[in-house]
Length: 257
Image 1 (cartoon, one colour):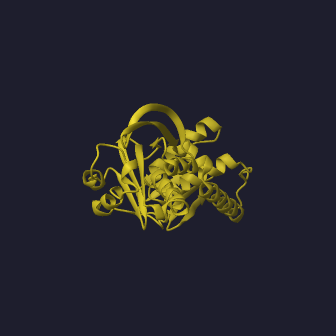
Image 2: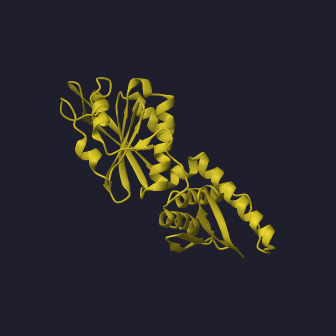
Image 3: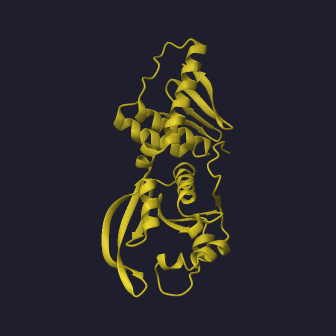
C-alpha cells in the first residue's frame, strides 16, 4: 500500500543488463575503481537487499552494507550529468529515506571526479574522513573523500518534508475546528513541520513503523510528545491530538480530540 509517488524519473530494477552497459561506458568505467577490465554488476543488482535505480541516462546503486546503512554508487552517462542527475538524486534520496529502512547513506568521491563530488554536495552529503592513494585511476592511485548523509540531515534539508508538514498541520487544524476541539493549535515551528512531514511521507510510502520511530527519536529530544503506532496493517497512528490513517495519497483524521 502507500499513496506517496516518489519515483518519476527513476525506476527500481533487478535487471543487470542496463547497469552493466552504463558501468562499462568509457566515460563511466574509469571512475568505478577496481581492477582493470569490464565490470559485471549482476550479483549486486540482482540482490533484492540492494536498491538499484535506472533513468534514461544512468542511475544509482544503493548497496546495503549493514542494517539501515547503504553505500551509493552513481552511474550516469555524460548526457545525463548535471540537471537530470540532480533531479534523479533527489528522487532516490526520498525513496531511500521514506520507503526503505535506510537511516544513513554513504558514498566515496575519488579525487578528480568532479561530477560525483558535486552530486554528493547537492544532496547534502558531508565528508567524514579522507584516505590517500587508495583509488585506482589509470596508472595512478588517488585519494578518496568518504561522505555520508543521515536521515536526520536529509529531513532538515528536503523541501517536500517541510511542505508535507505544513499540509498535515493545516489538515489537523481544520479537523480541530470542525470538531470543536479545545486543544491548542500548533505554533509555527519549522523543525517540527519537517519531521512531521517526513513521517507523513513514510506512512504514505507504506513505512509506518519507521515513520513513528524516526519522529519519536526526534521528538523526545526536541520536547514534543511521542506518537504511537496503533496498527501496522492497516496503519493507524495516534498523534496525541488525533488518530490518523493513510487514505491513498491523503491522511484521514479518524478521531479528533
